[in-house]
Image 1 (cartoon, rainbow, N blue to C red):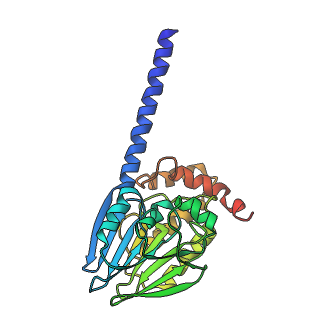
Image 2 (cartoon, rainbow, N blue to C red):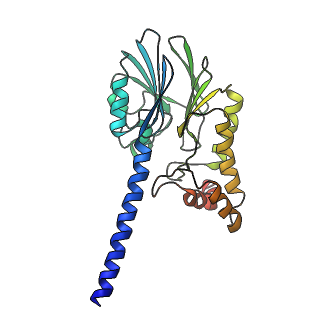
Image 3 (cartoon, rainbow, N blue to C red):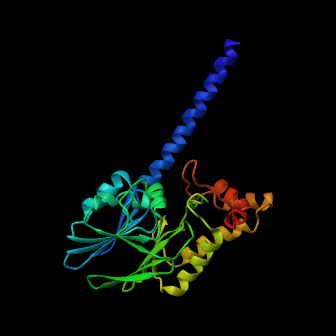
Length: 281
């Protein structure tokens, strides 16, 4: 009996240790930061939560920050911004994209039109937006010689998903409308709608001439990232219920990154299996 208990205890410890290592590796991958300098005025900060961009005017007096990250990465991002006049755009309310808002007390913050409760819950209490764009609403900013369009694409990943387009550079910061090489986060709790998400992706290609695309998570890409995101959803949705075809797609997306207990092929299929019915309620 003691030997059996010892064996069971050993197995439990091994499982706990393996789960801890798996979780830590996933979290470490999610939080590491890679800096991509596109030109003297534009820097992209990949990771550390959601991807961020910082656009600075030629005289360094103005800056646009798209998504403020979370934790230590948010602090590092803030230290890199030295302009006196700062505009922050949150592509959506989630903490990994808006967790650093409090570090910009004097900035004007623009985001979608969330309710106070939604913002409080999703952002873990981060500073609220000063300007909230309604679905379909677009505003124009000027940062140095660059003309910037900020548009609320409406409900998709969350109830309000905002994109930022730099006209001169033909660059789109897509927020979590696009995950690249990573399984997306899907939840009815924060308003995910597959039909609306696919519609928003379709509109992006007609609204903007995209040369460079910065996804919410994943490497810098181009407009083909939109096609890749659409294909991911459609390919899985169309074979829900067919175990053999789902297994084939699982292998196809095996190299995609995931967040432990949050995202992954299993979570995507679970959402899509019941998603359309729940979206209509």
